[in-house]
Image (cartoon, rainbow, N blue to C red; front, top):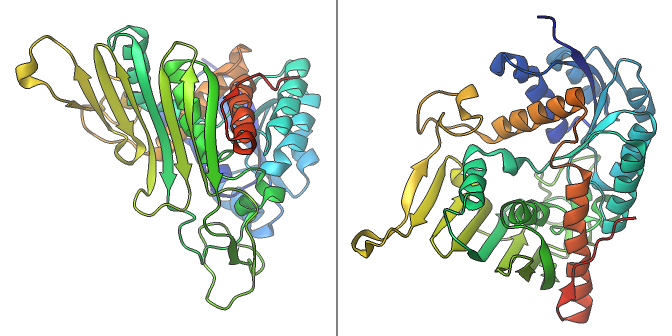
Amino acid sequence: MVLKTVGIAVIGFGWMGKAHSRSYLRIPTLFPDRPADPKLVICCDNVESQRTEAVRSFGFAESTDDPMAAINHPDVDAVIIGTPNMMHEQLCVAAAAAGKAVFCEKPVGGTPAQTARVEKATREAGVITGVGYNYRWAPLVQYAKQLIDDGVLGEITNYRGRFFSMYGSDPMGLLSWRFEHEGAGYGVSSDILSHAMDLGMMLNGPIESVVGMEKTFITERPLPKGGGTHYDRGEPGDPTGPVTNEDYAGCMTRFANGSVGTFESSRCIVGPQSQMAFDIYGTKGALRWNLETMNEMDLFLVDGNNTHDGYTKVYAGDRYPFHGAFVPGDANAIGYEDLKVIECLQFLQAVVSGEQHKPGFSEALAYVSVQDALVRSWGSNSWEDVASVGL
């Protein structure tokens, strides 16, 4: 059987651009029943060495420093965007106008208003969209969703979501675009809190109201010296500049199903290194999952015999969705980038079938509608109702 070929353009060849590119390259080696063969047509980056690497090491047919050349390339069917946040709107809208499917790393916009404009433009253009909420695709998260939907946990009463990361905990971490409103929009509420809340809404449904707070703990950072990311470090005495978005965001929430919840995110916390985690509690059981141990999930089920009450550790394995494509058996671990492969496979399927991918820009809009209420709460110091910011 001759498979359809889907031409891929990647704009922004940093960590995420490389992760997507590797993932598309791996799909044919892992999924013999794939819907199409991805082809890396063109990579766009403003750094010459990145463009060279894209062609030499990843096998892109071409490279360019002009995003519009990548978007309008005649062999490109889908555009993957991994640039700094505040560039997303222009690129997504241009890709939609060109009739291309578009996948954007989160956040789709650095602000809720930007995301709303992007969602409207792509919806009206009728193109397939996707957003990088990749933790949805962890096999045990998929299993958790099945347990909840099947009523195994009973009526959900409480949800706790969080994403704690140490990437900004060192005051010598460079003032990259992530720490500036001009480059990133909001801080952790656009960055890592969006992952935690997206999972909360995927697992437990819509959020109706929020009350929260934010704080910037490290207010000055060393200026980059001709480049650098948030993982790079300066030295004491280096010139500094102001951090202009938040390091921490947290809130209490009311869900539409009557349950209550809390969400927190911090990029300056010390201890949790990449604790993207949730705990969910129901009338018949509970479960908890943490990215730091992503191949394990703790499950508590009420069975009427309280002499052995307690959480049972469940290990990932090939009996759960997608896992067996990477490794057979039980308790053989998969990793972070394997989730990106699953994500890319699902987006590829959407492009071929013409059926909208989930999560797409409508799910991104659902999150920023909650974010908008959260930001309003920072000013009012009170509960704020969630209302769609869609156009």
